[in-house]
Image (cartoon, rainbow, N blue to C red):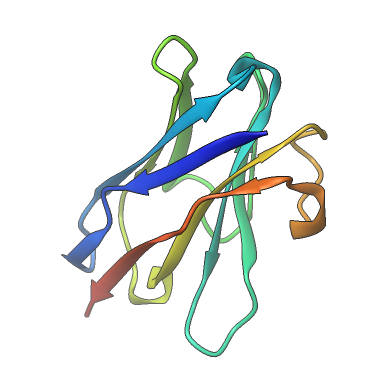
Length: 124
């Protein structure tokens, strides 16, 4: 398994941008699909995006398509989430997660390792 630590959350106005980072430690980071999930207050945790082990393939939830971009740097053991045109409904705790499954596996149960989460708050 890998250990994951997110950073980069904060408070931003609607229309603004944030870049989240997820630093990994442990073995074989470059063999894992990496994903981002989020959980808003009172709601279940939901899939946001995922990237394949080599970075060639990505998958996005419809709600963030065209606004968010996932990327990874395997040499730095880090995955990123660039969030642009943020909306108040993007407010949530964002979690980084690692999986041995396909980027099209969007269920929490498909992910083996999780970070502690980072808060993103978008004000209107």
